[in-house]
Image 1 (cartoon, rainbow, N blue to C red):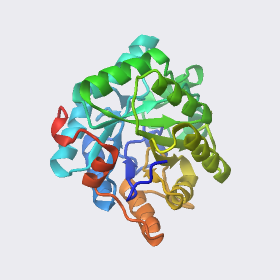
Image 2 (cartoon, rainbow, N blue to C red):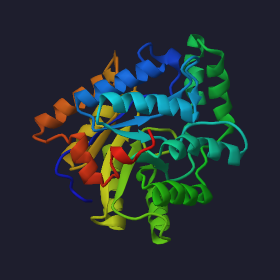
Image 3 (spheres, rainbow, N blue to C red):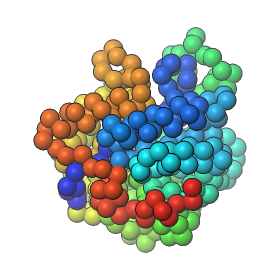
Length: 316
């Protein structure tokens, strides 16, 4: 693992996997998402990771025009790095889904996008079973119950296209999201084929059904496997879903890694305490890491560490 001089904090602001009814604090409108992103940057995040939502209904959206509204407004108020997802949930044929997922990043050409390393069955439909009595919008039932019959697709054809059209042609840096140990081997495989080049910004994902759960032994195993496969050719970061977010990211910081927190990954601030914003979660992990005598990277420092193309080379 390439040791970074300062810890990079990513804030995942918009909870694509969460229903608005699950938290009254979840940002849904463009104005709410922008405000929480800017506040997260002020609290210590050098990167904000975005999923788009329809500004009226709150339904997850792949519309490039909505992404542009987010990105333009955030950039006008902050120098934070904007990371757009390529994993936004969508409906249609396999080709239609993949085209929708790439639409925003291709149009906006951000500094960073996510890059999912394999298929997943995270089972958001199980959330619906738990919270169905609190449903507010008609789309929530449709969106979440449909997920029981679908798998998040990340075929090699999509990975190759993503690597070429975003990486090679637009100079986008990737956040490689790895939900399981096998995803590290997939990353190694596509790197050996020349589709991507080091250093790799690897985001270890814990706590989602279908992937590694939030246990310290898995955290250690993940890093040991990444060290075996990539040596010094990767920069490590960790996110954890739900109640284990702060515990897992604090351990990561102590192990020399970077962290991601935010309301996409967890609706909780602490035990029994709902988070009121992603910025609140960023502030908490920053305080913990600072108490461990770790320094927090600014956006400019994160750009230098990750080697992004810079905010002046994006299409927004």
